[in-house]
Every structure is written in C-alpha cells, then in structure tokens.
Image (cartoon, rainbow, N blue to C red; front, side, top):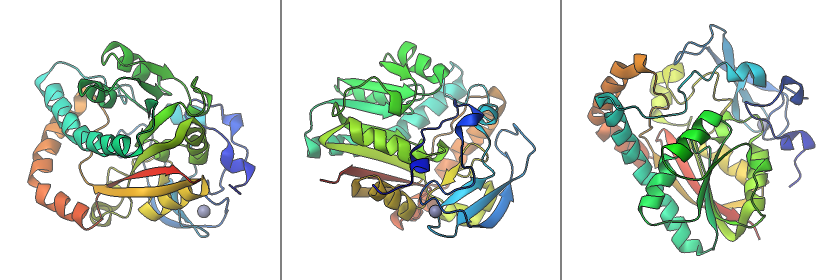
Length: 316
Ligand SMILES: [Zn+2]
C-alpha cells in the first residue's frame, strides 16, 4: 500500500537483534524526525532502571518508545507470569472474574462483527494469552476457533487450561490458508510490535473477503493519561513500543488496506500479570475500579476512554 519495505519487516520480541535494520524510523510513516514528550522507566515491573523517552513523530504524530529495546533485550522486560495463568487463591479468582467482565464487552463487539459479516471461517485471536477470550467464545457455542501467541507459556496455557487450539508463533508465519478467517482479533497486541504493519498485512491475507479485523489498543488520548502522565499503566514502558491515538490507529489500518467500520471507547483494563507480589495492589485496583466507575463511564462516553477498539474490513 505504498509503504517503504522497512515498514513490512516482521519483528517481535522473539526476534534476533540483527533483524532491526533501521532503528529510529517511525513504523507508520518511515519519518526520522521526532520531538521528546517525556522520559520514563519501567515503573510497573522494575525490570530495568534504564530511562527511555516517549517521542512523537514530527511527520505523522505517532507516539513511540525511544530507544526501542533490541528484541533479545525486550524479552528480559517481560517478567515471569506476564502471560496470565490463573491460580486458585481468592485473589486469583477475583481477578479472573474481573477479566471475564472486561472480556464480555469484547465478546459482544466481536459477535456483532461476526453476525454482520456472515463470512464463513475461523475466529483467530492473535496474542491470545491464556486463551480466556476464546474459551468464553466457545462457551457461547462458537466452534472453529484458534489462538496464536509468540509466548510458548501463553500458548501452552491456552491449550492445556482453556482447551482452545493455540499455536506459538508469529502471525506472518501462521499455518492457516489465505482467506480462512471470518474474524481476526488483536487485543492489546499492536502496541507491543516493532512493525505493526506486518501483522496487519498478514491479517489481511488471512481474512475472508468480507471478514473482519478487530483491533484494540490503549488510547494515549485518554483522560487517564492526561491526569496521570507517565504513571498511566497504558504506557507500560518499555513493553509498549507504540502509543496510539484512535487517529493513529485508523491511519495505519487505512495504509494497510482496511476501512474502519466501527469504533468503541472503553476504560476498564484487565491487569496483565499474575505476580503474587502484586496481589494487594490488584485488590486495591479492583476496589478503585469500582469506585471510579462513574469516571470511566464518563470518559468512555466522551471518547476519552483508556482503550479503543475498532472493527475494520478489507478495502475492496
Ligand atoms: Zn510517523
């Protein structure tokens, strides 16, 4: 779609450092000029004391982490248990209930897309984690589902815990036939990728002619970011390499051959970790989530929620 070849490299946390040929270029437009917004480090997991910058592309305004950790280094910033594997404690069950509550919203969004497209084929959840979303879809009678994750820990959990077929790998090398998917979902995936266009290209190839792509990302144009700044957990330095506004996401989808059909702003986020040391933080988080519900509903209604989800289909 007119993008430079460097924007089509397929990189993920599992790649070798040698794969990055042109670091420092914007993955959306290829521009090299940036302005620094602020500095930040890994506040969430403290995997490093290194200071990173959050910069904005002067050409297309996409916000990104700089410098981006090389892939081998990036792996070290994903702590053990980052991919959710639920335990059996009361807190684990509480957290599991909260995740189901959040995913129920995703489920309704995806089911509407399935109903309206009526395309035959599989539902492929890219970045499936422990498979909970697909498990919930199966509970509602949906068959022909599969998950994909570049974490072997996550793919194993999806298969053994949730009982959904899951593959460990990258989307561009997924063993599925072109046109075989009715829906491809990517919940909180694109912000982790060096070159998100490579995943969108692969999704386009896998989708049936009227199939639907559902993408959700943290929304840096949210009120929570304006209030909390670098303390907002949607930044998640240094694991989030990109920080999207809705306009950035739509521009990227457009460049990759998609048209956006529907947008939804949402505020509740499920915590993406099971580290026991965070147990009380999670309990407090759940209490705060309840207390802040009026605020989160208002910001979502004002299109300033902390995540944004879109439905798109291939341009004809
Ligand atoms: Zn740019």
